[in-house]
Amino acid sequence: MPFKRTPQTFNSSIKTVKIGTGDHAVELGGATTFPFYTFDSQSNWVPKIGVEVSDLGVGHWPAGIREYYDCAGSVAEIARKASQVKGADFVCLHFEGADPNGHDRSAEECVQIACEVAEAVEVPLVIAGSKNTEKDAHLFEKIARALHGRNALFLSAKEENYKAVGAAVGLAYGHKVGAESSVDINLAKQLNILLNQLGVSTESIVMDPGSAAAGYGFEYLVSTMDRVRSAALSQNDAMLQMPIITPVSFETWNVKESVLPEEDMPQWGPAEERGVHMEVVTAVACLASGSDAVILRHPRSIETVSSLIRALLG
Image (cartoon, rainbow, N blue to C red; front, side):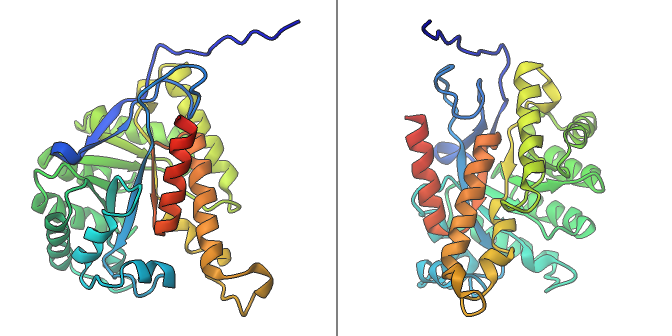
């Protein structure tokens, strides 16, 4: 008996969130089917790729990345070249140096860097903090004010600081707010509700339900994103219909497979190759599980993932 497939269609969709301005603005989200299910329904959904740029420069990154940015000196020059990476849709400025337990860069220094980067690039900006909730709340308020009108996305508001971040970033200066939770669908939904009750519209929220490198508890992340996307489409859950962004590079370039020197593990091959493979594998799995945007670091990773997206979407 021949198999007759019935397309799975939904009456709901993932919201679209616009970042950036003018001709270079980018829309995240908009899916009406599960990721890459083009056999069910055609949609305009195309996942986006961001390039990570650190406020510490590229000196601490692998040789292949340093070679790409060889002629770039300042963070602004690095960002300009990052925006030209083939397959890149936006730039993510990561303030690693703002961490109080690290370089503890001042908010004033960070604001200056952010303004210089904003002048150097035309593509949308995503601003990522130091992961210190107290410092980031203060930092984001200053940067959001300085970048007023650029419609940037700030990563991220957490349960501990969502009021300060949401009020400054989303309400006072009209940027988009990243809602970061810890690999749990209920926590992700609750944070979205809290931000919405604060006054941040659902069209201004992008979800970050957690991140991990492949092989490092990654199955929990994948199952969480699967459940989020299923509830958003199948159950029409409005508080889970925000697009998802995953900062893949923040995790994949810190695991042992990416950082152990070849002389320590000769059987593993070159460290940089391992890092690229880890980044690509993790990014692809995230996209297949529901991410609407991924942030990557290595130009080769970006080009590879971009090519794969084009191939899968035809």
